[in-house]
Image 1: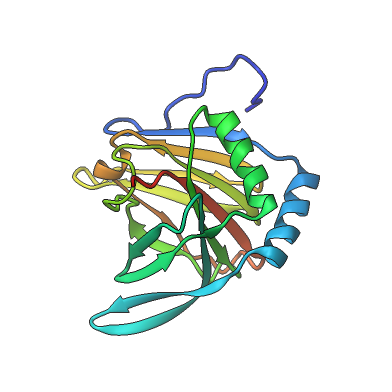
Image 2 (image 1 turned 120 degrees about the vertical axis):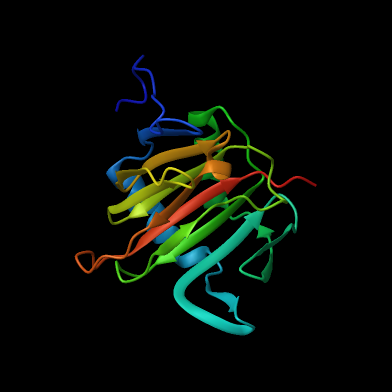
Length: 200
């Protein structure tokens, strides 16, 4: 999809939500530049979750940045947003320009290989803007991504290539789960930046 054409960006979901795929927001050289910069400058930490009262550490690394030291809680673990790095601010402005939305925070995920992913979940935390846009920018290797409707169990799959931009908004989080499936066929790393809006 050419971002600079007049082609209409269609909703990938058949009902009960809006997911827009903008195609490549970054070229190959820019992807490589930002991937290397984020690996070096982002304060990556192994993700943690409290499961059945026990603190579990994953192989996936995460980081949380924002306009202010917002607190963000998921999987019963609280994180405090760090100040934007120059590279993250550049990407935030790019994503805002492409999507016509504004964001005040970004949750980053670093998957070292296809052996790491995310199970079915929603990004419907109460501290996020209700039915607000969540923009997902992909760097690194190509990975499969999927949505599943809560009631009908309908599944929508797509391939997210490096530099690609996807936006979830409207009633998507209320009706659809999404996941990054595990795969032994992918050896390289993937960085996913999800730009969000925290409501103060």
